[in-house]
Length: 93
Image (cartoon, rainbow, N blue to C red; front, side, top):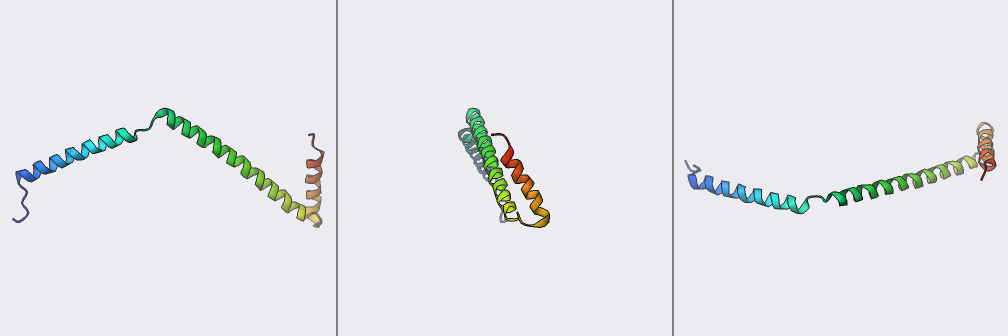
């Protein structure tokens, strides 16, 4: 056979696997997450996500109210828009 594995090929393969294993362990040790940094990152990600939701909801409601103000003279929707406008203007500040 042309490609018959010899004992030296097996030893070479074992040596390569051992070297690969050591490199994987070294890479894991270098990239192993620091718990404090992981908690801090997740906390900041949550805060930013919450603020983004608040800003997005505020802009969405503002756009909806602006759109509704355009329909103030429409017969069926106009009464609803006037009610919403009156409610928003009469709320305590």
